[in-house]
Image (cartoon, rainbow, N blue to C red; front, side, top):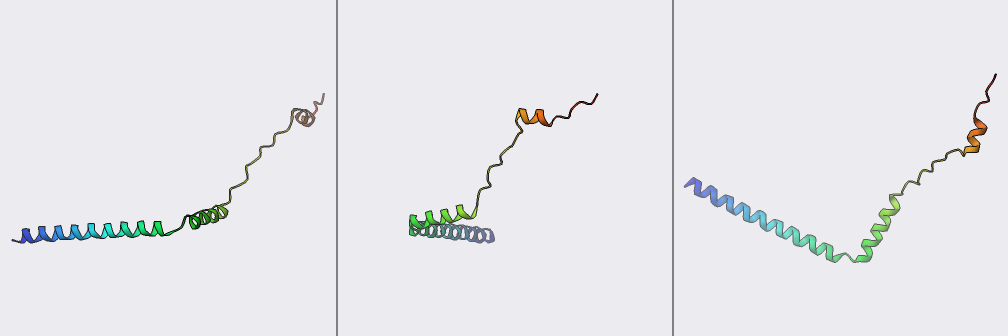
Amino acid sequence: MKERERELRRRRHRREKARKERIKALIGQARAEAKPAKKLTEAAHEEAKTIQKKPPVKIVRPSKSAKKKTEPEKVE
């Protein structure tokens, strides 16, 4: 008898959990539909402004003529 009760309790719990998950999904879907696209794009722009990209690092190499000028002179 106890096994039967345990099984019934387990089934009921599973049904309740599934029901709650479906409700959560519906609420999430409704929230997503309620937000106008304009607000979403504005939020995306604001986020892009906050995350500023680092400027690209420019690698400066001395030209060949500059290298020749900086080479130490040979002392004899």
